[in-house]
Image (cartoon, rainbow, N blue to C red; front, side):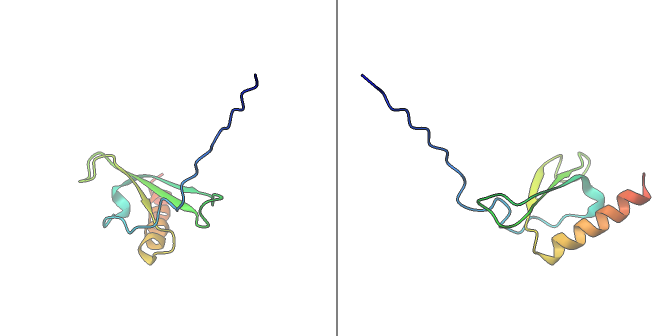
Length: 85
């Protein structure tokens, strides 16, 4: 008797960062991560982890990479981090 084992890998069917996030100030961001494209998503993913002192209290958000607000946040966060090293 032979049993066939079938492993099904379920990939998400859409990108994780498709919605607009809350209004975020670059000074409230603790960590910024830019992750590459995945097979199921043609966009890079931008994750921000918020400071504990802000109103978001350490939450992580995934931001849509094509929005102008996200592009501005990444730009100003990098400038601000470079100044405060």
